[in-house]
Image 1: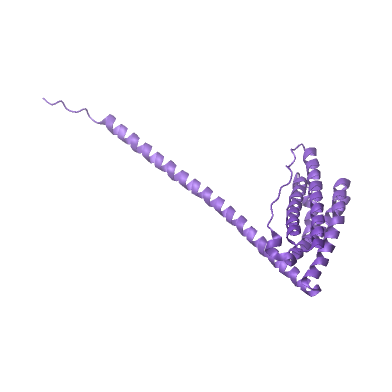
Image 2: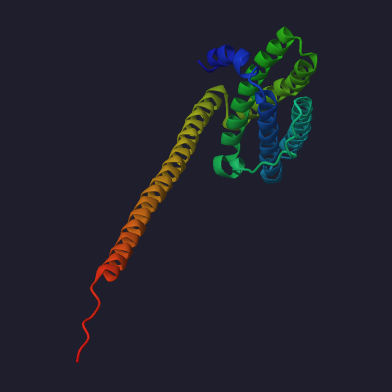
Length: 236
């Protein structure tokens, strides 16, 4: 389903003015976030060979982030716009939250999804005649294939077999769905809060304006009453 959606929307979204640079910048930030998670994994794992693989993967993600950012910058400058700042990302500390098996399942799913997506983008830019952006995705795809392969091999090894690895991948899919739902809930809550604050502001403003108008009316009425009142009678 996801691949079908990507296939349908890719020709459209990349032609929206400014969207290409923005999308490439989001890729750069995602690569930076992945880099941080992999560095944490390298620090936490008990295996020296796995630590080396995680560190190599982190170096690849660092390079990818720079490649995406530079191409985004080129597109922004060509459009007469200021480039985005160097990409900065945070981490969810996935290795600690998911454990090493869960972390590898998450990484493998992400690398496989990214590889499929980037293959589609490379074909799209080849058809458009954009050799530079196509070359960008082609170069990154070499690493994505290697990441996809090694993460699956490690997952099978640590999980204890192919069947256990597939179960770990299913759990990772469920966790990703839950995380997406939670993020959507937070975004919806933030939107509702913003709308509520706007509504409160408008209502409070209307009440304040009404109160101010009533007070002004009362002041004018008192002034007219004083002006129209007969002068006091002289007492003899």
